[in-house]
Length: 257
Length: 74
Image 1 (cartoon, each protein chain N blue to C red):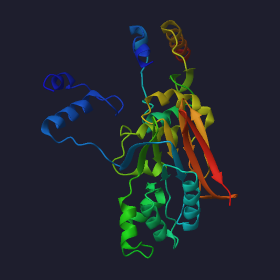
Image 2: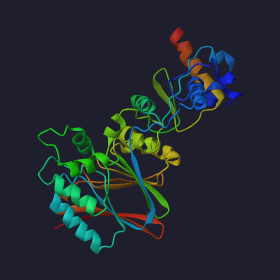
Image 3: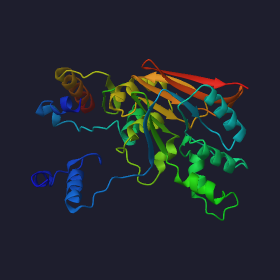
Image 4: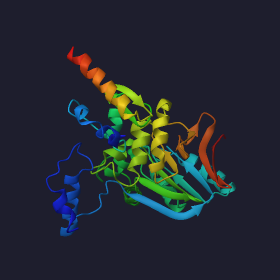
């Protein structure tokens, strides 16, 4: 820390990214005790390995869909249930749904709609009752859990990048940038070679996202990408089953009445 | 890739400006998409994607730069 700063002084930044002048500022801040980690989004992490995980998306206050999905997940003996948002949809079922998620210990994060809802003033017409509102406000925007040996990341979509202070160098920002910006939610398949070239730098081997309303699974560069779709499809109530079977990641959409 | 470009002979360095984009950043991804690149690493010359998914040899890259340089000066 004493030797490096003089060597960095006066070297200009080239592209506004990770350059010597910024490193010098960071080192100076460390010495002054004023450097703190940037946290534009909250991450909840469940470190306990799981073999079977139920996935939920776009519940939008649909309590009946949640109840039906949870019953089927229990019957299939999942170890955990994860929901990547949106939990609420501005309907009358929002509060009951949030209470049920809390009661059932569902690992849930805010979708874009949830995040906006949580910012509403208490006096807003659509404001939630205090307990539901506090639960929603306290939810993180990013989840991390383990499917046995693999680390899984879940986030809703690109609103996370718009949160104040978001940095391309935050934990899991690489995965989110690759999903949202490079591959446009895995829709640009012609860019999969570039995505594959970036996956060795990923911290997660499974990436869940929910912004686009379809259920789909891709494996690119050894990383499993899962678009967590809506809680109802044309076949009825829908949820995803994510499993580790002998070290292999297996995903299946469970839908139907 | 950037290192191989920076290691070009001095006479080549004098006629080019090198810009490098970090693919981890949204800015880098945007530039990658603007150039209609598909693979990494990629090299564009004068806004045109010339090399994709390969690192050209110094001689090949130098010749291509010189060819473009002389074409522009004609």
